[in-house]
Length: 415
Image (cartoon, rainbow, N blue to C red):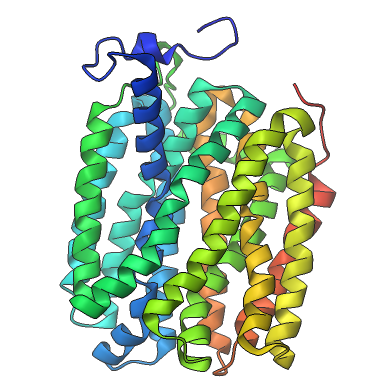
């Protein structure tokens, strides 16, 4: 550790052939960690433009295809509870490598699926592998940095990884136009191969002396201890409500934009990318302001904007104010404040558990992505052929995020 409390990653990486100069080391680590954190979005956003096409290919209703997103979120949330403690006990790098292999197997299975049910099953396998990336990448950031600095670094990572969901729908739409929906999943296999190569070149950030020796029973007892912590629960709940709305947007807009408002699949990626640009802008602001204002203050502000824009989305979806533009505008603000909510909620939750960062990250991540299971499923259950179902879900989750932030998380002074 150096004088600032930051692990000397250059010393850790001294044995690595990539560590010839500090600047290249920092850039390489930043790129690989950003790629790992992008697995949640790259696994979903890329195939969004193909939702109607896959629905027609399998001859099922849109609600069945939306279940491929729900099944993915089940695997993604449950898997984090497994990978977190494994990372605390055995280190970060090897578990991520195993997860990447599992992700590639699941992606290939999706490409070879002949029915919606087969794809739903393979999406669970894909997610169980994919989730090792984000949950352990977050823990690696916590290994390296203290609280406010970790929030800053997480925002930087999310700013860089924002390229993935920005390009995902655009690439997915182009792949669909030039080849097929199956080709989208084969491209994901290729992404997994590149990520695996990057992971194998990374150093291990968790020293053997800092690893957990807990058995399986102790792990679950530790989880119970974590979820009883009111601040961690508040951060997880506020982020969970927000993610519920975000995944309602992800699952609902392909049909709202393409089917209801007749937006071409290729143009859908542009509308989706507009929100990602907003999210990247908010992450950029957060990385610049968090050391000055504190992560909790920005976190509460973001939750307030999420609630306001969520309610406006619901009203616009119900009454059709402004048509497509009237729906896109509040969704832009709702999605953008991810840059204020996610990084600060994760950093705040992990700050109190430096020796159990993997497990704490797993609890937060499972809550965040697990909420999407219900919102994506609710879209299928209550779908009425209009954007209204998506709208009221986003409105409710926005208010829920603000409520959890206000009542469960009290601001603390910047360290």
